[in-house]
Image (cartoon, rainbow, N blue to C red; front, side):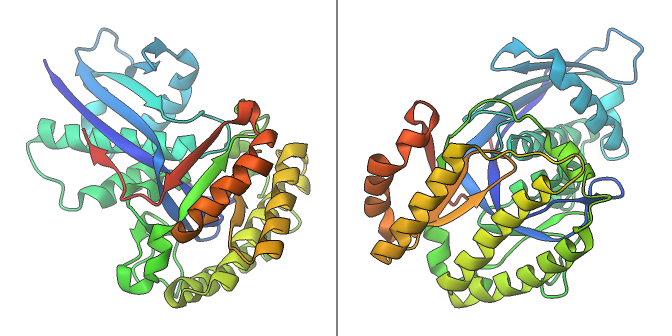
Length: 344
């Protein structure tokens, strides 16, 4: 037996944040993200003959080393997607995966990881079943969502929305959809994302737990309403190339995300002192120069600085002189807006 598939799939950075779930991995509010290029997961899935009578037999390796602690989440994913991939109970599933960035540190490693895994399974299904899936990427998006909500957005390049919203034609809670070029001012496709690695360590509170704390959060309903409004405003900003409006939405969404964490029960803080130092430096730089770096955060301490391509030289110089000192070992990743996943 020699059946395998290998894909690389990108992370993404949400502009309007997904935070809070309903049902099985459905979003409590819609979201929209940039797909990244350099921050990605490379995964190979191989089928072998089963040696146990368990529903699922798996072997998970990260960078060629067995990682048993990943198995629980993978088994949960295979259970949730068993109706989509019926062959997964018939074989031993061997997964070899590696990231180009630190996992579990708040750079959406579950998004790139689960989307890469879903793509591999979709490809293998076509081989095992002998038929082509009518909408390959949509099925992969549905499957990826069942492993990690934000993973469904990593199936496409550019700007991607997820969650039903009246202003986004074809939008759905079940899968993500890519914005068309006519919906986006061309300058946004040249944006860069400098990810400043304040803390490469594993987050103290997982995103899964963080989402669950929205269930009884005193500000949840107001948050969901605000996210819907920001989705409408973001559509306008992207279409018109309104960088002022874009900046306001992106930064207010990041601050709101962390405010929700700090006001949940139990409350928790994922920012670090260096996170705040970087944010304040960027805001001061923007005010003094008139340049347009935009700050956002995922559910972690690391800072994403988004900026137009034409400002790259000035931003790099500024980061080298004033920001990298706040990063762990001066580390950062600079990513372009990417075209989505690729089969290897």
